[in-house]
Amino acid sequence: MGADDGTVTAEDEASGAIVRGERTRGPIDPDVLSNAAMRDDVPLIGRLLGADADPDAVGGLDSTPPLHWACWRGRGGAAWALVEAGADIHAVNRYGATRSARPSTAR
Image 1 (cartoon, rainbow, N blue to C red):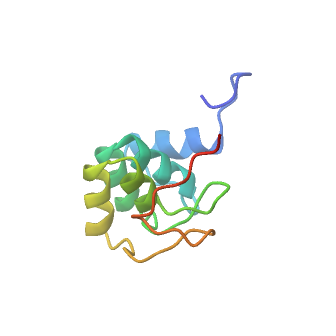
Image 2 (image 1 turned 90 degrees about the vertical axis):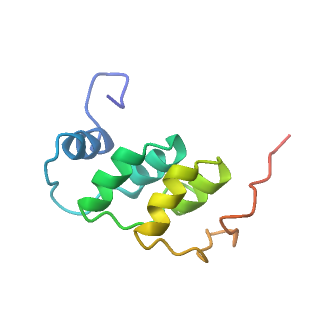
């Protein structure tokens, strides 16, 4: 569950339905696919893409595609799955960063 008060978030609901092999109503929250890419959760990525998730859907505060997260975190399995599904290898996030550009760290 996503919330501390025990409520189920939209992300919990969508990812739970996909894990169970159910179809969801409406578009899949792009943050679910990005989070799976960050964790290198290739089976979940496959289920999400099989449920018509957009491999280029941008999510999060910085509007970053899932392929960026996979590449930045060295998640080869996730990156491969996304590219095989048609992810745009030339996409940029809202800051103009590419999948190969490492995000800067603030001090």
